[in-house]
Length: 142
Image (tube, rainbow, N blue to C red; front, side, top):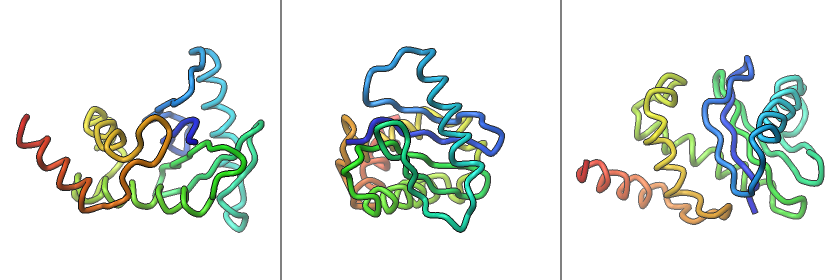
């Protein structure tokens, strides 16, 4: 199960945070700070998987953004690493060469894409085409 997903820039500013387990606001800020320190200082030669408390953080860096997922210790790291890449591909297709500002000014659309992709902490849809078609339908409604 996915505990939370974070999108953070190199300076530690959280651009997207979605929690699938209940946490207090102070605990959320603490977690965001700890995860950022964990991934930003990590040597690029090391794997993209790191233990965090009693879970695992799987992260990937794209340009200046770190996409981080916290999952159960027994979950498949490679599946989640691939899901991060799929999420970035969908964002890239939807925003036509996505950048950090797209995430900031269109955060509601990013959350909508995330909700089509992950539901209640579990991967729901893994088809890029199906998600993009669904987002197209939702765009027509607006």
